[in-house]
Image 1 (spheres, rainbow, N blue to C red):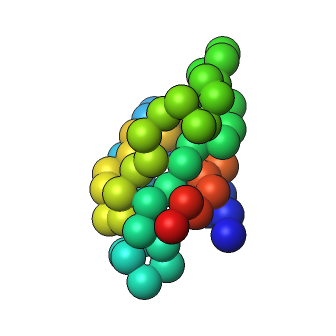
Image 2: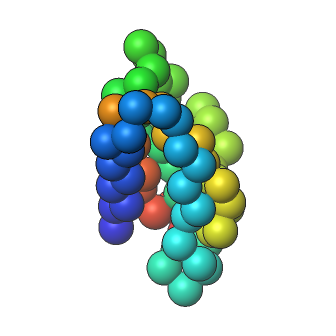
Image 3: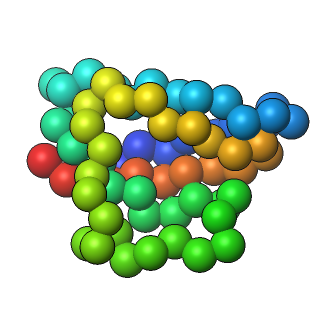
Amino acid sequence: SFYLIFNAHFEPIDFVLPPSHWGLRWLKILDTSERWVENPADKPGLEAGASLPVGARSLVLLRRQA
């Protein structure tokens, strides 16, 4: 499963990830506000319900890990 976050605002916004019944952990696959996204396998996942800052006018693609 994937979770796609859009931020169309001109400032960064903190988004809260879905509760655990949608997935316990999420891996960041793509972030258009970053110039380089490291290999997702090299980064720890994000916990359900965690806050995730998303840059202005960008999107983030997360993949459910568990």
